[in-house]
Image (cartoon, rainbow, N blue to C red; front, top):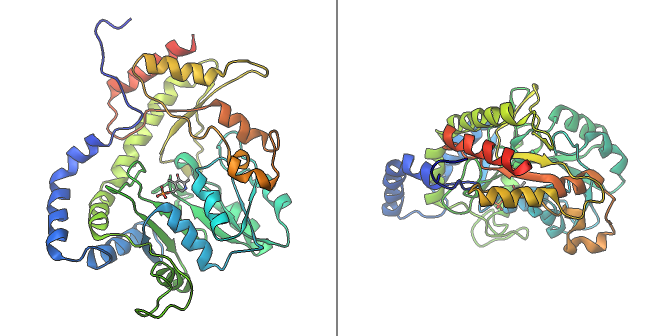
Amino acid sequence: MWCKRVNSIPAFDLTQQYKLIHEEVGRRTLEVLASGHYVNGSAVESFEQQFAAYLGTAACVGCNSGTDALYLALRSLNIGSGDEVITTPFTFMATGGMISAVGATPVFVDVDPQTYNLDLDQIEAAITDRTKAVIPVHLFGQPVDMTRVMAIAQSHQLWVIEDCAQAVGATWQGQKVGSMGHIGCFSFYPTKNLGACGDGGAVVTQDGAIADRIRVLRNHGQPQRYCSEVLGINSRLDAVQAAILSIKLGYLDAWNAQRQAIAHRYSEYLRHLPGIVAPQTLADREHVWHQYTIRVLSEAGESQNRRDAVRQKLQEQGVGSMVYYPIPLHLQPVYADLGYGSGHLPVAEQLGREVLSLPMFPELSQIQQDQVIYALKDSLL
Ligand SMILES: *Cc1c(COP(=O)(O)O)cnc(C)c1O
């Protein structure tokens, strides 16, 4: 029993990180405000260069969000009406949504219960004459086996767009995610491992011609001002966000290392708890723990969802948690007309019932980690 009331722990907390860097951020923000260049400009160009160098890619194009990054990537490859794109159903809606937004059809392939990522053994069976691309998502910060994805893609002449929104800094066999596919898409939404103070995103690629097309597409399809050659959109990164991202990029590896230490400690204690499965860490890849997501095992035919009960008990003990994602994309109402039903992608559906993401942010203290662990033990009783 607790002797005194301990403070509650949120699932994430952005205020502590801001306190750490507020002087630098304040100074650079005022400089940008004084410069009069608020959209694109030198702050954006220098962030684009720093981010490409960090990832080891030839080019980076900033844009307004991770959602736009996916849209621009698909458009730059001319993917549209009549085309199919294979992806995971166990992801944020943006991944499937942007496939639909360009007029293509998402084809959902079930996930691997260990990594929560696309089950690569099932991709080839889903390829048809219309398949143009695969979008692997490095979910929760855990990289997909990119060697295998690229081999499958090459043998079927498919494009690979990596959705790296949750995995900035993660590596597959020493290479950063986003640098191995034809295109990598990033989100700088505030809660991501590298988060702006507002919306932001980036598209990265090793192919200069693709980068050029994306630069045109993000600016209304205008290679030159007021002359549109293709239909584009307005999706620019603003200078204040770019300046803040440049500062934060300098801390990213240290922050990711703190996330890894927290995950390691959680796993030490949680690995042997009955009734849950702790997330896997695989030796051939570096996980950056955007989320630390356990499974609260359910039994067939249970009337009450055990995960929801555990989440409620954690909440009563002041420990926040989140469910990413309760409804896989193939069962989203918006996709009813694609013809998937309950039971079609059983692993994703089971994960939807079982996953629970525990508090995870670099500044989470050891005392707070212990509080989470004890509260979880209690909640499982
Ligand atoms: C956050 C996220 C996106 C979208 O990024 P936004 O910047 O919020 O538009 C896309 N895919 C995944 C997997 C995400 O987690």
